[in-house]
Structures are given as C-alpha cells and as structure tokens.
Length: 134
Image (cartoon, rainbow, N blue to C red; front, side):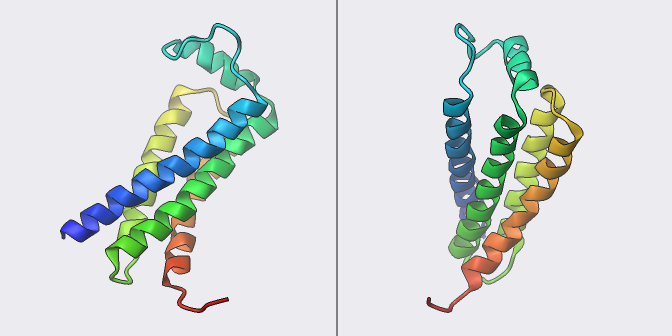
C-alpha cells in the first residue's frame, strides 16, 4: 500500500516538473507583461486571454509531457504492472487542469485537449512496461 501511495506521489512530482518546464519555455517565448505580480489574478487572466495560439498550445504540450512522465514514473515505482497509480495521477492532474481552465479564460479547443491529454498517462504506463531494449 505504501509503495502505491509513493508511486502516485512520485508520478505527481515528476509530472508537475514536466509541466513546469514546458510552461517556463512558454513564458520565455511569451513573457509576462512588465509589472505583473504573482498574486494579480486579473492581470494573469488578461495575459492568458491575449496569448497567441502557440502560447496556449505550449501549455497543452506541457500537460502531454507531464502525463507521459507521470504515468511512466508512477508505474515504475508501483512495480506491480497495473495501471492504477498512473490512472490516479491522470485523474488528479485532470482535476487541477479543470480548475485552472475554470479560473482562466481558455478557448474550447484548450478545454478539449486539456482534458484528453491526461489520458497519455496510459502511454507512460505502457512505456514503463516495455521490457525490450533498443
């Protein structure tokens, strides 16, 4: 039981790092406006609303990376060959993603991809099970 809990925690941590890295890339390409403070929700909403397509799509790519590594790491740590830890990670991330989309002005395509992309935890799960060497 402890190993499965640690698997989910490890998957969430590594997945969060994957999302964060891609978002850092996005912020370097599409920097915050000068003077935007971290606690300025209205300013951040305006920033997101005015992001071009690619600025928003980089976030989706971050979710995809986060899902893959989350599913992979959770499966490896669990070590039982079952997808449960990866699926739990995907469900947790999906809830956080929906919360973010409710709080920020995101288009419908972002909602669709933002929810569907977390299914990639299963691809990470499958990759973790692959025993063949290239």
